[in-house]
Length: 150
Image (cartoon, rainbow, N blue to C red; front, side):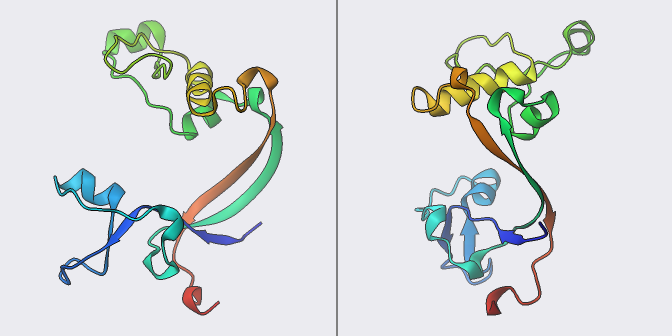
């Protein structure tokens, strides 16, 4: 516990010195319509890192034991709902098993995560096998002072 890791992300080297040395796909595509050729995150050099996480805990648990809070923390997408719908049904989340162009009635957090797991892993690691998974808890932190020298 307490280890600090850098987050790798898709990037490209900037030709525009005013913007800095690196551009990041997650940031640039949200801010503009630029279509750049990004390098995969696995090739990101350490000096390009802009996000750091501190590991708080690591535990082993069964996949199907995921809590609602943990399912939401995995990044499932909430549906846009009216106040009346929220009062009647509570927040609903995307059903990843349906094509995006279909009307999505929504699912509870754990069912939404299950549909996402099945979409990503398919037959390789079926939900019904209930495998053990590593759960990492972390927090964002500042760049370590000696980051590039270690």
